[in-house]
Structures are given as C-alpha cells and as structure tokens.
Length: 278
Length: 253
Ligand SMILES: Nc1ncnc2c1ncn2[C@@H]1O[C@H](COP(=O)(O)OP(=O)(O)OP(=O)(O)O)[C@@H](O)[C@H]1O
Ligand SMILES: [Mg+2]
View 1 (cartoon, each protein chain N blue to C red):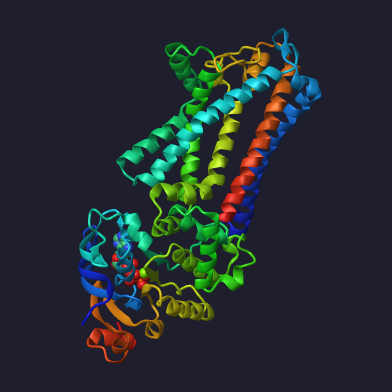
View 2 (cartoon, helix red, strand yellow; view 1 turned 90 degrees about the vertical axis):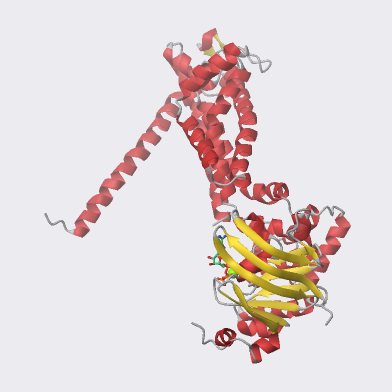
C-alpha cells in the first residue's frame, strides 16, 4: 500500500503530539485537582499548628517537622556514602568486573520497590538494632533508597569533567586527592547537588518505606529516637481511614508545592551545569 | 665534548599493552635550548614527550623500558617520587585547557597544591608568571575574570603561565599552537624563544617551519623510531637520512 510520505509525516506528527498532550494534560490535571481541593484549607494556621483529634482538626506542623527531619537525616547519611562511592568508581578504579558488579548492585537497589525497603528497614533497624520506630530508622532506610540516585548522578557529574583537567593537575605536581578535591569535585558540584535535590524530592514524598520505620506518631519529634509522621504518611492515613478529606488534600497540596519547587530548582541547576560543559 | 644535557633518553622502549609504540630511542635534551620533535601523525611524538614527565604512568598497561635521566637521575627509578618529577618537568598541552576558575586561581592552583600558602607570595608569583608568559598587559585588570573569557591564544599563554608559576626546570610543549591563529602562534613562538634563557624546552610540533624557526635541535620520528636527531640547521638543510629529507620536503608518503 502506498502512503504519501508527507501525509505519513503529518499523521505521525499529530499522533506524537497527541501523546505528549495527554501526558502533559494528566500532569496538570493532577496538580490542578490537588490544588483545587487542597488550597482552600491552606493557611498560616494550617502550617503552624499541630494536628489534633488524629488529624481531623488542627494543622500539619508536626508532620512538616517530621518530614524535614527524616529528609535531612537521609541526605546526611546518603550523600557522603553516595558521593564517596561515585568518586571511588570514577577516579580510583578502572572499569573492571568489580566496578560493574558495584554498579549493577546499585542499579538493582534502585529497582527495589520502596515497601521492600520499608520491610527491610523495619526488620534491621527497628527490631534487630532496636532503634524502634524512629527518625533514625526512617532516615537510614530512606538513605539506602536514595543511594543509587546519588551514586548515579554523582558519577555522571564526575565523568563529565573533562579528563584533561585532571591531566593538567597531575602535570603541575598534584596528587590524586588534590586533583579530586580541588579540580574535579568543584566542577562536578552542580551535578552532584542536582542529584541530591532530586533525592530530597523522593524522600519527602516517600510513604511505604517510612511508615514501617519511622512510625506515625503525631507529636513533634524531640530526638532521633522519636517516632514521627511525615506529610506523605499523614496524607495516607487521613485519606485511607477517612479521617478528614479536606485536611488530606491540604497536606497533599503542601507536598506537591514542595516537590514542584524542588524539581524546578534541580532542573535549573542541571541546565546551568550542562551549559557550562558543552 | 662536554655534554650539558639536562635530560637524557637511553634505549627507550615504550609499550601500550602489547603494542611497541617507541623503539630504542636515544637522545639528549640540552639545557637552555629548544629541542623539537617532528614527524607524521601517529609516529609517537606525544607518547614520547609524555614519557619525559611520566604523564603516561596514568595509562594502564603501558610500560617503559630503558632510562630517562634528569640531571643524571633516572626519573623512572622506584625510589623517585612522581609528583616531584612533574613539579620539575612542566607540561603545556595541545588543547588549551584552563581550569573553570578565575585567571588568578588558574595560576595560584599549582602554587597552592605545592604548599605555597602565603598570600603575598602567591600574588607575586602569579604576576611574575603572567609577565613571563606575555599575558600580564592583557589581563592585569581582570585577574578575577573566568579564564574561559580569554581568547584561545590568551588561554594557551595562561596555561604556559600556569606551568611557569611552579618554577619547573624543564617545560614540555605538545603542539601548543596547533589550535591557534598565526598571530597567537607568533606570540607563543617568541615566548618560547625567551623562555629558553631560563628553562630547558622540548616541543612537539606538526609545523616544520615552526621547528625550523624556534628550535636548536630537532628529532625526526617515524613509526615509533627516532630516524634522525641533530642540530635543527643540519636537519633542515642537510639531513643524513632519506626519510628525513622526504618528510621535510613534503615528499613523504
Ligand atoms: N592511550 C593509548 N593507548 C594505546 N595506544 C595509544 C595511546 N595513545 C596513543 N597510542 C598509539 O600510539 C601511537 C603514537 O601515538 P601518539 O599520540 O604518540 O602520536 P603523535 O605522533 O603524537 O600523533 P599526532 O601528531 O596525531 O598527535 C599511535 O599509533 C596511537 O594509536
Ligand atoms: Mg600528538
């Protein structure tokens, strides 16, 4: 059957356009839907008072604190581990069986469903190590979950630093460590930060891994051993147990706005970084 | 004859894995002279010059046989500190490659990693090396500007200044002008001519006129072998080997 190539071209173009439009529409519809239902309850009071009566009334202050504490904990644990691994893989070893195994392992880690992380964290940190439902257990679990992202993005960032900059540093009498810390890392920093910011986004929105490990206490946490409820978990409980749909939407709106801000920041940084090295 | 060879290459063989890239090279690099290395693409010029400050150490599977002496000391001897060798034997690369830092920090970097932390001394030495690389006039008002704002020729002179700042004894150039316009090239050639008063220089070049203009000695490489090594004048007016003559007269092939 003969199809006019120009007609074919136009048909394909239209179909592709339609697919794109559907994707964008769904995204915007979700955001619109959440904001439409959530914004009415959002106000200063909602953000700054603690939930009362299981969350039926009051605000979400303690869950914001819980989210921030867990995220900071996860980032503080995962960043040195991830960036260190990436530096080791790109700067200190050659491509070999071992590096491939490490890389494959970290890719697999990325593919594990978060609820499995939750179960793992529960068994290891909550019960075995006796950290209980706590910020510590939650942060450790989240850290393992975001580790692959941080390793991956850091590796990409380190690799994008031109090799000849390392050579120059060596030719000036620089050691490997001086070269890594003073030439390679500063150049790779925006890329690494982008990965960390994306991981912040993932930590904030994670539910399954956190509910098993940090619990769902509504009090403001007082130490890393306190149980704490994050916004995502709060939303889940409010919605699932039918406690208060308006408050659930309000929480969701705060979450969505936070994620949008984080992703836009990460995107901007990445863009700046790409421009610098292309 | 009293030799004043700063560096000496003795029976050098170099392998990339199984591949013998340089065969039985013998030559001297005389103090305060410019020694040029010429030859067709892929003959091993870069490989050779990078051996002189152990830049090829980084390449896995590479192997050096023979000896490379700096003031009579084998730089490949096990007790020698490679960092120390590279400090004494600086290098300027083909592609100008300033760090994505300010002009000032590009030069200060080498000083800082070599333990010079006194601010006044760093400032002095940055200025001196920029003057020595004939860049000072053009950048003295904007030392804080990013090095990427400089032109290609200026960037290459910045790279030379960066190499000069740590006061090496020998400077190796690997085709420093191959990406530059004629005016920038002339500036760098003039600079190399001035630098030889204080430094010992080896330069790889694709450009035979350039070798003829700036060097005192010339080595002609072909397929990993040093075909002929002599005074530049001799190489270009009365070469001993047929291959050298073919190459310099452009009848190569
Ligand atoms: N890292 C490497 N690993 C393996 N072989 C290499 C490597 N670098 C260079 N070679 C090989 O060694 C030989 C000499 O290369 P070299 O770069 O020294 O040539 P050159 O004379 O500098 O050429 P050009 O004028 O094109 O720069 C070539 O055959 C090249 O393929
Ligand atoms: Mg070369």
